[in-house]
Length: 232
Image (cartoon, rainbow, N blue to C red; front, side):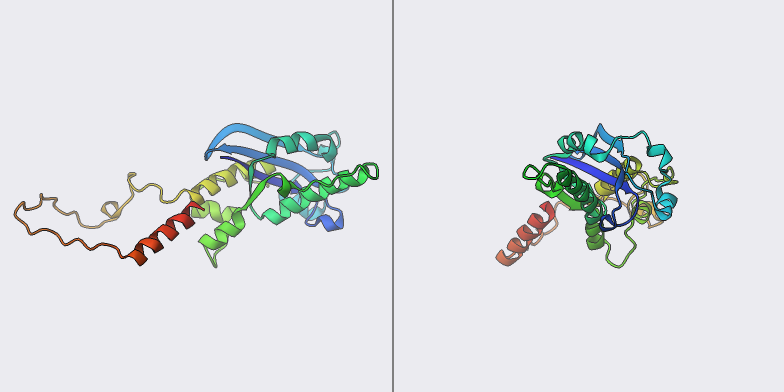
């Protein structure tokens, strides 16, 4: 299973107001393991960056002056992500911006030749914000809060950066979807939490046989349904 953990930085909050992508960062996971095959690209947006966005990511227009336009890197980017599942925190934001950029490319093409690309036609989309809200209803589920909840080190995150955020999100996603962790590690379990220690003794060989209570058909069906839900 190939997954791409993706993040973008932009000139502002809404492509409907003409805001553009300025950075794309991606981390590849293959069978839930990072491969080291990353994608990172700065993009010249052809417009000014909002002051509020600058305060978040620290990327200036001057630093992007010599960077390629989105249409110049779109093919390589699409080839990198095509066929993978994209893992994105607040996916509608990033997907909306990517589709807006592809839409601008189509509008620039000659009439009758333009084909609008939609990223969801080439990739599955997993929204980790929605996943976190299901797992932790009523709690803060921004990336920093999830890092604290899952003990993910994000001390390098002075500013938002697309590749750094993708790397952090990959760790958070694996922690959120990995089930129980640390069950048999040092420090885990009640024996390390001040609970009394008990003497372990062998069972009496002459003890009566233990009663066996078998699951009903309804209970077995409910168990199978739960396992299928976990697989999803």
